[in-house]
Amino acid sequence: MNSKLILLPPISILQFTLLLILIYTPSSLTSNDYYRDCNNLFSCGHIKNIGFPFWGENRPNGCGHPLLHLTCEENTSYLNINNVRYKVLEAKSDEQTLRITRVDYLLQGLCLSTFVNTSLDPKLLVFGPQYQNLTLFYNCMESNYISSEQTFPYRCVDSYETVYAQLRSSDFPLSCPDSVVVPIPKAFDYVTDYSLNAQNETDYNKTLSAIRDGFVVNWVAGIQECGECRKSGGVCGYDSIRPTCYCRDKACPNFISDAKELPSSGSYSSQTQWSRRRKIVIGVASSCVGGLFTIIIG
Image (cartoon, rainbow, N blue to C red; front, side, top):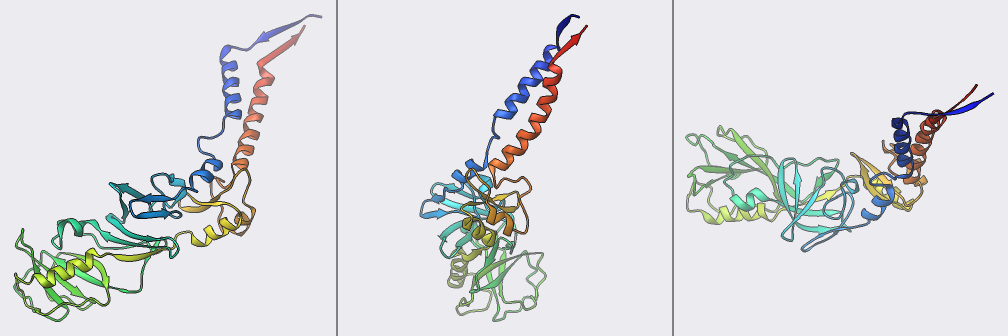
């Protein structure tokens, strides 16, 4: 009775080698990596130590909500919200507030070329209570304009068009195809003259200054979940658009049991990810090992 060894084709050996590499090579960015990197805080110029729910610079995108991306350019912080670019004027982590201002009004004054309202996603950011809406109307038909105490006209120097500013929410008397809503302090009011006056720079500058001073927003994204995460000894982050918790070499049991939704990728624990993948790959590898050497007994 003779035995002989038959080797499978080289491609099978290559496949087996790749499986071994998969078993012993960790994923590109593990929970340990996020645990380390999400402990970093964003700092840029005079804006210091901003963490969750923001990301940017030395904080990878898994450290904050995808839509709360802070950038740093020439020691100035910026944040894009609903297609509007904002300059960050002030940040207070202890109060969870930012003071931001629209870049377009910084660069162009009141006479804009594109018209996008100031709007927030209330699940991420909310306006402070000390503001009222100011609506700026553009490209209006001026023939039927009637002055009022709530509507004020400004003449654009370059285009010779008129921008109409209106406080509160009364009906506007003109037909205007474009408008922009911006928040300004409730204490704001016009100065004196409510007639159309091309030389009225005092009111123009006062209105523009109120807009450029910016407004305060509170960040609310993932605050409750982050508190649970920190109680578990973890670091707060985001798995896609859902809050998650990164822990070092272990799961975060308090966060997992208390949270209403679990992260889809299980990124809260590198050990959990590692164990699941290893079990799957070892099972496949075992089947390859069985077929790698075939012993035929004759």
